[in-house]
Length: 149
Image (cartoon, rainbow, N blue to C red; front, top):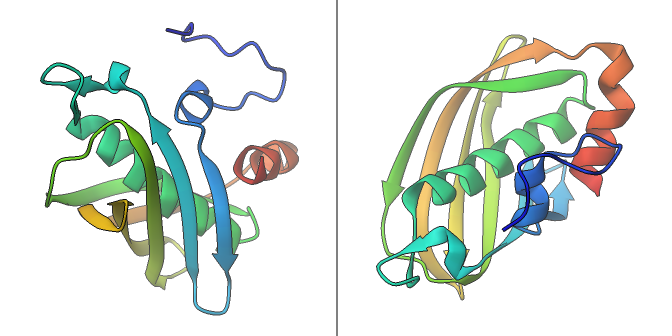
């Protein structure tokens, strides 16, 4: 298991590297984003067979946040106020794909949703309400590099 301290200079959160998180596609016209993740048995319970629910939540939350970053040109940081998750099926170690979409993003509040799939099987869905906070301009490049890496 890796340290909880990032060794890179770009301040990319370690969980993104641990889950090999990658933005696969952004469609600004349709206001959607697809993001892939990989989970090892280290993040599973029941003998390493079932992905722990908190990591499912992380993947869903991350995909919604990255979509909000993209759609606001990194001028707003979505700070989750409320997230409702429906766990529909268990997930196993392996690859995942989250598909996030916008319900509405206003000046100060955003409403988003995401679905998490493993091998085309719907594992969980989520909706969230997010406070759209201004990003300090000195962090703008860092945020873009984190999301787009």
